[in-house]
Amino acid sequence: MTQITRTKEIERKILIELYKFALELSNQDIPQLYELGHYLTDNLISKISMLIGEEEGINYKFINNRGVEQTRGFYWLYNNILKQIYSSAPDYSKIEKLHELRNIYQHSEWSITYHYNKEFARNYIKEAKNIMIATNIIKTGNEIKSSNYLLKKTNKQDRSKGIKSNLLRCHRALKNICSFYFQLQYPDIEYENEVGRTKAFISLKTLEKYRSDCFEQLELYYKEDEPKYKYIGTTSIKIVYEQLEISISIKIERIEHVYMTLGNKYVEHKSEVEPLLAQLLEKISKL
Image 1 (cartoon, rainbow, N blue to C red):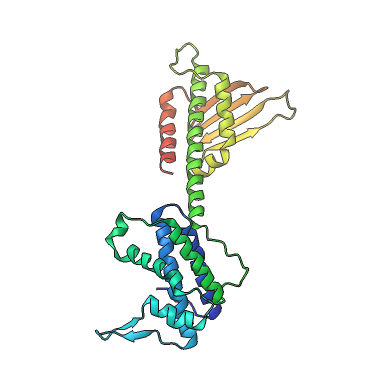
Image 2 (cartoon, rainbow, N blue to C red; image 1 turned 60 degrees about the vertical axis):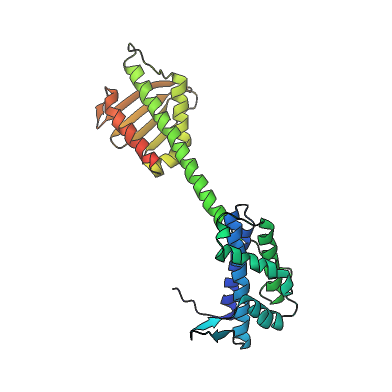
C-alpha cells in the first residue's frame, strides 16, 4: 500500500483526479465502463463526506456487534456530515436513487446481464460536481475536463497497429525488390509473379517512406544518396539487413542496376535470401 503525506491541498487534488477519471468513464458508451464510472462517483462522494468529517472532528465510525470498527453508511455520511456542514450541497433525494443503482452494480448478480441507462451515470457525475462546488473542492466557474487514459491507450494501440501495417508493406516491398533482382540476373527464366521496373520503383518508395519504422523496429537500413546534379546524375540506394546488402542505382526514376550480396558474396539463388525474408516477417508478427 502506498502512503502519501496527507495535506488538505493534496487530498483535494486527489479527489479532483478521481472526479476526472469517473467523468471519463461515465461518458463512455460501453455499459461496463460507464457503470464503473457510476461506481467511482459514488466512492468519490463517500470520500468527500469522510474527509469533511475528519476536518470538522465528526466521528463517522462505530463499533459493530462483532466488536469491529466500521464506517457508517452512505446515507449517514451524506446527511450528517456533508449536507450538515455544506447546506448548499444537493439534497439527498437528488442522489438517493443514483446511489441505490450502485448497489446493483456491486451487490447483485443482475449486473452480469442487466445494464442500466448510461444517463444515470452521467447524471450522477453532474451531481458529484455540484457537491464539489458546494464544498469548495472545485471553484465556481472552473471547468474540470475529464482524464483521457482510455484515449491515450487507444491512440497507442492504433499507432502500434499502424506501424505493423506499414512494416508488412515494407516486407512486401523488399520481397518485390529481391524478385526484381533475380529477374534481372536470370531474364530467360519464366517467373510466376513477375515484378516490373515500375513496381520495383514503387517498392523502393515504400521503403523510403517507412524507413524510420523499418530501422527502429526491424534494424532494416535504407539510405538514399541523390546525384550532385538533379535529372542528370544517378541516385544510389543502399538497403541493408544483417548480412544482406542491396545496392540500387536509379536514373530519372528508372532502376538501372541492382546488386545483391550476402556476406560480401553475390547472391545467386532465391534460397539464400528467403530465410532472411521469413525472419523479417516473424519479427513483424511479434510486434
